[in-house]
Length: 252
Image 1: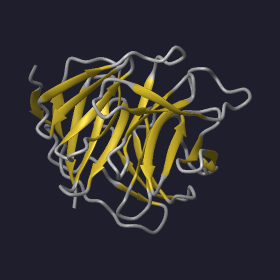
Image 2: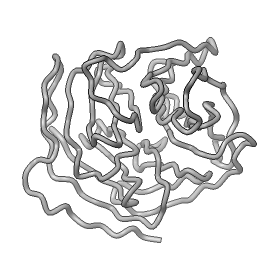
Image 3: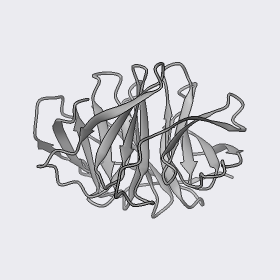
Image 4: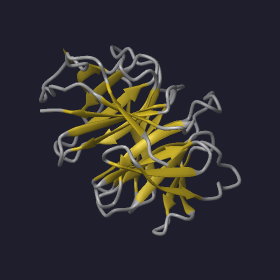
């Protein structure tokens, strides 16, 4: 199956700065769209070789696309008994691929042959939290997995892989108008975190302690469910759960 490619008609940059702190400002070009036929797209990360992207889908599939939006592989694996909704995917520096499951609030590791998953750890379940408002995104950096809870609470957890321990990285700052965490990405270049909000259509860059640094408008993505950064090519990738599209945006 080959995904069709269309270019967004906008000529002006579609991501604008709303300064709230001190960090670099990213100037974006217009997005390039890649249409797919898949529903329930929920997360994206670069593959092990860095020459393509993995896209996780709710019901136990991972799709591999080239950097030009062409479907290359489909990996299917049985979901664990208490898992049904894969909402996050990330690649660690050692090449390991991790996923998070929303309702069960668990972290899994993908096997090297991409045929099975193994439970890494079950994370905290907050009192009063809604069943389907759990783990929405996962990011790997410095031996730590950052897991973003969708809401109730708006919280980013920190899981230390070597010690098998969980703690809270931060809760959403009171002055941050967040409505729904939808993905998280750890930036190896500067140690910051990026979080997308599916309802406000915002991309926010934060410090590892949760200080909001910059906010960017990503309203060209109807429902931004996934985000990752390709620093080698200076490109951002987004996925849209509503339109089943991938978006690639160059930056400088």
